[in-house]
Image 1 (tube, rainbow, N blue to C red):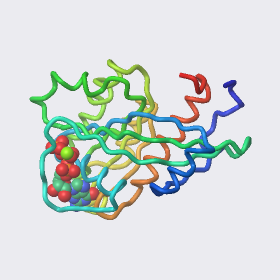
Image 2 (cartoon, rainbow, N blue to C red):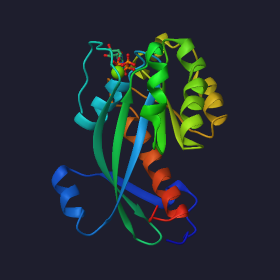
Image 3 (cartoon, helix red, strand yellow):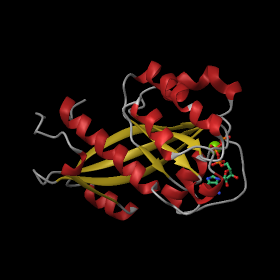
Image 4 (cartoon, rainbow, N blue to C red):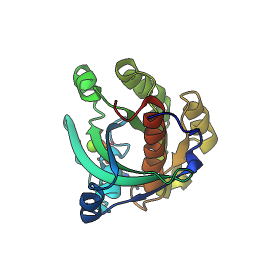
Length: 210
Ligand SMILES: Nc1nc2c(ncn2[C@@H]2O[C@H](COP(=O)(O)OP(=O)(O)OP(=O)(O)O)[C@@H](O)[C@H]2O)c(=O)[nH]1
Ligand SMILES: [Mg+2]
C-alpha cells in the first residue's frame, strides 16, 4: 500500500476491542499482527504492566518471570484522514529482567517490531539501564520504535530521578517517555496506544503485504 501522507501520530484514533468485537471486526478490517517486547531490569513492573493492560489487574506480590511469557491484546486503529481501520493484534512478550538469562534474550527478541522499555522511579540504576535494554533489542531487530515507561508513579514521592532525566534518555533513543503505574493504571493504555499507532504508521509506510 502506498504511503498516504501519514507522518503524525495524531492523524490516528485508536481504541481497544473486546474479544467479540475483535472477532467480528476480523471480517471487515485489515488485521495486522505485531510482536512487541517488555524490557527492563528485574522487578521494574513489566509483568504487572501487562497484567494491568490486558486483565485490568494488579498484585502486590513479586513473582519473578522465568524466560518469557506471551499475552495478546487487540486494538483498533483508524486513520482519520482516510477513514481506514486496522485491527492490530499485539503479541506482548514479557521477558525476564534477570541478567543470568542474557544469552537467551536474542531468541526472544526475534521478529519484534516494537518495545516498551521500563524503569522504576524508585531505583535510579533502572533508568541507567534503559539504553542498554534498547541497544540489546535493536542489535537483533533494527531501529524498531520504543516507548520508555517510568513505572511506579504512585510512589513518585520516593522517586530518585526526574521525568526530565527520563525524557532525555528516551529522546536519545527517538522515543517518548511516560510516567506510568501498573498499580493505578496511569498511562498504561496510552503507552501501548502510542506504540500501536507508530507500528501501524510504519506498516503503512512499508506496505501492508510485509
Ligand atoms: N507500587 C507499585 N508497585 C508496582 C508497580 N508495578 C509493579 N509493582 C510491584 O513491583 C514488583 C515487581 O513487579 P513485576 O511486574 O513482577 O516486575 P518484572 O519487571 O516483571 O520483574 P521480572 O519478571 O523479575 O523481570 C511486584 O511486587 C509488583 O507488585 C507499580 O506501578 N506501583
Ligand atoms: Mg516479570
